[in-house]
Image 1: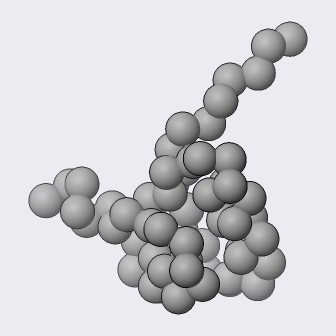
Image 2: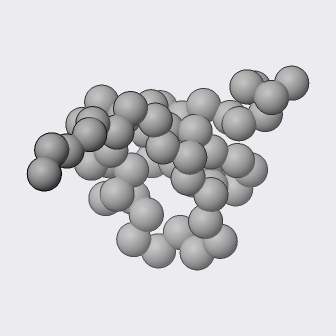
Length: 58
């Protein structure tokens, strides 16, 4: 079975526990991260580039 490369991930979670290593790995794999509100603030706060969903929809 062939694997498809993930290019973009939309992340929006209520509980941020354990989120940092996930977004770090996605970033290391070259995945563009999209997010909303508090999740976006959290990801930005740990130094990972993140694009606001609102920036794409407005």
